[in-house]
Image 1 (cartoon, rainbow, N blue to C red):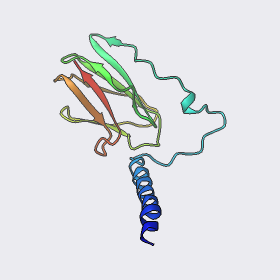
Image 2: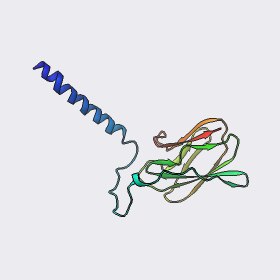
Image 3: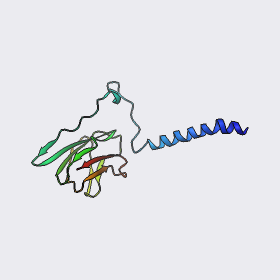
Image 4: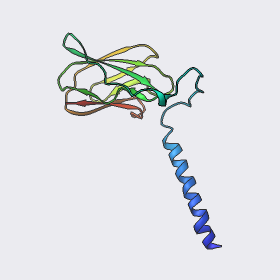
Amino acid sequence: MRPFISRIIKPWLALAATAAMVGATQQGCSKPSAPAKAEEAPAAAAPAAAAPAEKREGGVRVVELTVTQKGYEPSPVSLKKGEPVKLVVTRKTEETCATEVVMDGYGINTLLPLNQPVEIAFTPKESGELVYGCAMGKMISGVFMVE
């Protein structure tokens, strides 16, 4: 009986445990998805997002971000240290916990009402990776690469 347990049962238990762990880690902070509408195209068929066009308003760089079921888009975005930035963030989904933007070190904790653009101004102080995200420990996050 011992070889049966070792050869058959243990691999099945390992597989079940792995599947349970993967399911738990993929839940994140998103809500269950609603059934897709017939007129919507599948997400896999959508083309990859292009790099955002650079806009300026009186010496201030304007970066448009959108919150979707995939998170903050586009990400990463390149910025320059010391260059003033105005983010224009529009939340397009209720399916995630990304209902605000939190940026440590800049005092930014801004609510994002659904389908309303919100402007956030800041100036990157240090070079490197600047991570921003939701208020739930940045479970959903985006990155600015500051040069």
